[in-house]
Image (cartoon, rainbow, N blue to C red; front, side, top):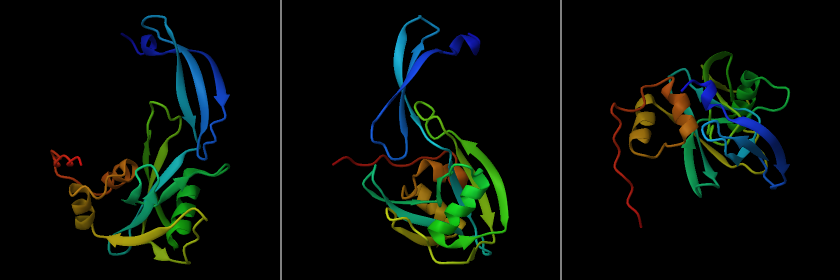
Length: 194
């Protein structure tokens, strides 16, 4: 089967007001190329996102802790956020780093991008590396943010990954482009239920 034979035909789209803060809810009607049946499929539209691996002069990664509503607990992750209209991803990465942490850098390197969840998201997340970061101002957090900063060595990042404390998929993807953060093969104990 060729790639063209896998492509679903778009028959129409409609938007539904779902009251979502970060996404627009779109329903696409598509035809399955294999059997001709039509299906409605959810697409959550968003602007692109950024994640930053921010290293100080000692090579430590500036990590953030914040409460995440989806999982209902504090997570350990890299700084990041959304690309504002009219921004490129580097500008957004520098802005998010400065707002969330108060740190900035003159040394930036693009690490590529990932699809956060292509099953129903239409955007990508850009990964950036900022080196030789320096504290240049206080955090400038939005009303809906509460963020704690923490510097971690490469060994500490790896321990947090192996121990299951650091499991934010986009942070892991960005960090893995800079550090060897997990042993191969990666094996972790399954969590206990209850």
